[in-house]
Image 1 (spheres, one colour):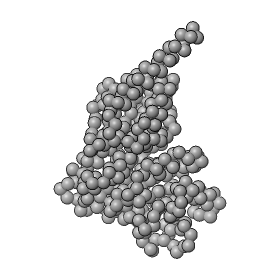
Image 2 (image 1 turned 180 degrees about the vertical axis):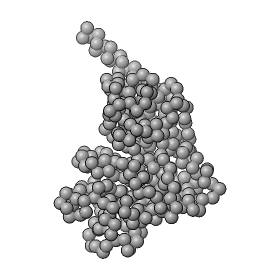
Image 3 (image 1 turned 90 degrees about the horizontal axis):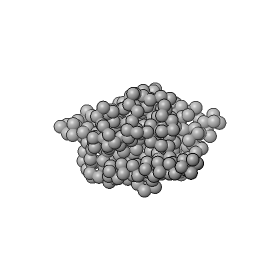
Image 4 (image 1 turned 90 degrees about the vertical axis):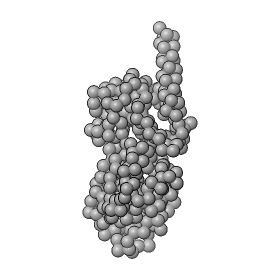
Length: 344
């Protein structure tokens, strides 16, 4: 599987500088870089070989491809060229979005296309935040808040210009998305390897499940977690279930959330104790109305076997999701008892 990272960030956040630095890095060799608008990312002319094609080879061994048409078609064409050995055999893909873009449709394309899903695996989302203007941008632009909410990594740029609002911005980012790890970049310098080391693979989740969830397993007791942050209409909370959850209940819960919450379910991730398979926890994560197929860890990462579901939502009450889960559990239990009674 070829890992794919999505790079997003609001206009002026420093994405261009960061990307240009990455393209010069030897760590970033054999990376296919897909850009949705050349005009939005002013790559240094010296970096790009002259070419009339949409695909050009860079001096570092990276590839740069302007999106012409749907992202799915661009990725399919890139994979065909890789298989035909007409381009450098890239080992990973970075998709850069425009500054005003909602990254969710890109994530949907990567997860929802069955053909691409057999070749490409989402590594995660990297969101660039301007250390100088980040607070003001988050106040004014709902797109910027959403870009932060769906991130697995946050990269704070222009840190050489940090002022007195630095701690306030860091606190704001943590309030919107407590599970995202924060990196800093001065003049676009950042460790390229950290951008693909986002822990979505089952092996990494197993090693550090608490960090992946952004949830302190020792701080919550009972179903509702006490960690609850607000940013305007954006809230983050965890729901903890002491008892195992039936597979049918989990399936129904995800279906209802996807159908009725749509764009307001910004991000959800969780580790679930499925009643039918108590020795191997299920890992679930999704964006808006699309969920990744559950992945099964080979074992529990800690003695704590409670199901933990972490939500980043817009205007969805925690109590509503808790009530929904309880109602589904009750309904499934009643149906199960009724079937058992009939068989008896």
